[in-house]
Image 1 (cartoon, rainbow, N blue to C red):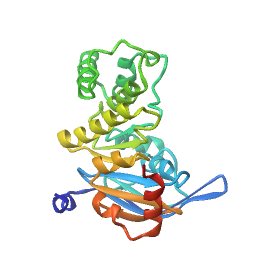
Image 2 (cartoon, rainbow, N blue to C red):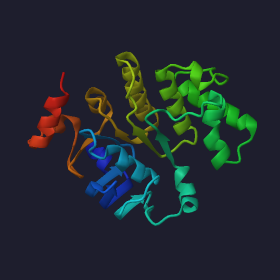
Image 3 (cartoon, rainbow, N blue to C red):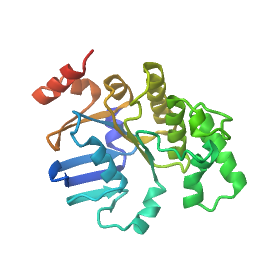
Length: 252
């Protein structure tokens, strides 16, 4: 299976990325690539820069130097307006779901369609119902975020990220703050989406069992660099001391 993956076209390539935040160097020369139909989980200790890396890929912040090629285009020098066509091809699931409290579930999910497409109300309503079905939450369009559980909010966030049929989806700690049952449900949903639509994903995550279950590759972020990229099986056996120390510290 992995041999077939390597033949897929490249979606993302990061080269020599550096980023300093609040006078502290967070990323110190990141090199990383992602191919179509791969799910890569990014692991690392607290404060390692995982969420910063995800924001850079999403184009929400700019690196100090380096290159981020998304769908073959370097997004680093792009303006927000120039990024719009690429944003249509990319979905982002934020850690806290980031739903608009004053909008219904329908309007939250419809928001990207209203922003990026000329779809009419009937087309929008059909697509919203479709993605809600996909994440296992049919017929909740009229509810507000305050009426939803934490797990439901996460799934609505995923539905919103999928509504434009993106070619790549970025997940920031998708199981954070959830009880074990809901965390497992979100993990299974990500795996199911990968199987059904060959979703290409970068998943920043601290949940090791989930990361190993959903990933083709695991990338380890340590001291500002990605020091290991391997399959879940190979990652567990990594001879690198920082990886084994991380695994030991998160076991149990």
